[in-house]
Length: 191
Length: 191
DNA sequence: ATAGTAATACGCAACGCACCGTATTGGTGA
DNA sequence: TCACCAATACGGTGCGTTGCGTATTACTAT
Image 1 (tube, rainbow over the protein chains, first blue to last red):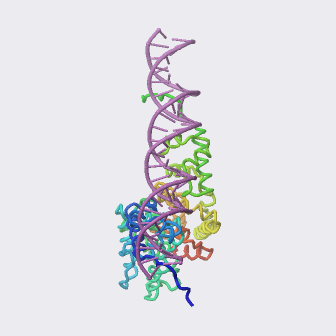
Image 2: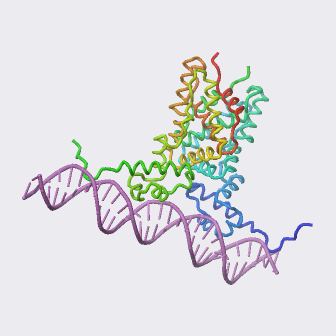
Image 3: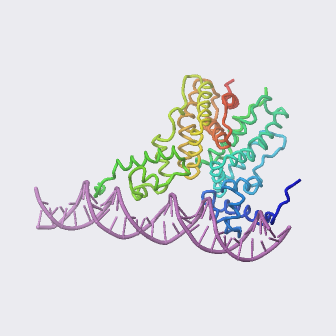
């Protein structure tokens, strides 16, 4: 028998306001300058209501990332049937994002958040290139005969995302030609 | 003839004490919990002496990294003449470092510092896999005929280091087999 | 040579500010 | 009734800045 809950249930509007305020301030100021007090003020909520449900700032950001409130949707990898073209187009999208100041700031902030919470690192990896989207796209390429059957899709995905992260961190945004070179270096066509 | 300096010269002992205190506290507590006041106390120096010479905490860390006070020396890539074996051995060293809690903490802290200062990102990239050591080692491999002449050494270096960073951030330390798979996926032998 | 002056670096102490994480209080709704 | 909520207050930490007194060094006028 389910223990009958006593008292008022959790306020969904407060929860949403907190998540939206977090996403908004994260996009505006970045992870470093994100404060619980600022989020509470922006959301019209008391600090306690945040501390009651999230143990730390990083967990709050992790929830936002999980709900897809932080990453632009254009960063998902397409599937036109041509693996090489899809990968190049996807990387070019990412590199273009890094060339916009706000875009680079967003990526840097996501990396900073990931250093504080490895759940965020995992989600970032998965959202961009990890076991979900990118690795799945690579697996599709294997099935289509565009990639060797024994190609380590997980490692390749991490290498692609990692190369982008290194470019973001070192402030050397990639150009279109870099995307082509990188993909051609990693993608060994089947014999 | 530039105007000869007047007044007391900068204290070299204070400068060294500050850098060493920074490196020590960085290794102990990580970048997040590094405070100027803590560094000043540890170095036996007043805060102003730090603020006089370094505009921000991240610049202080960048100087430490430049002086090689933060990275273990075992992370430089060897050169035995066998490129594949060297790369695998180097990656295994890195993965092993990430499996020690302190080692992972160090790497995470370096990444966190890099998000605050792109000079640090550049230095981290260069120290590990960028234009200096790793790319040079790859270039040597090209000369030795172990790598295609048109191999994009810079992109490959970024991909290798990036893959390691993704593993560090997502808390999935690599194993020896992963190192082998990654190197074999990236290294296309010449025809 | 020998003072005096200017410029600079230093340690020490204190300030106002922002944010942290934790109470406490009183209101409200299931 | 009792969990949730907003509001408010609290002690603590670190920030970046400022003012003070004191060395240390080079320039300059005697």
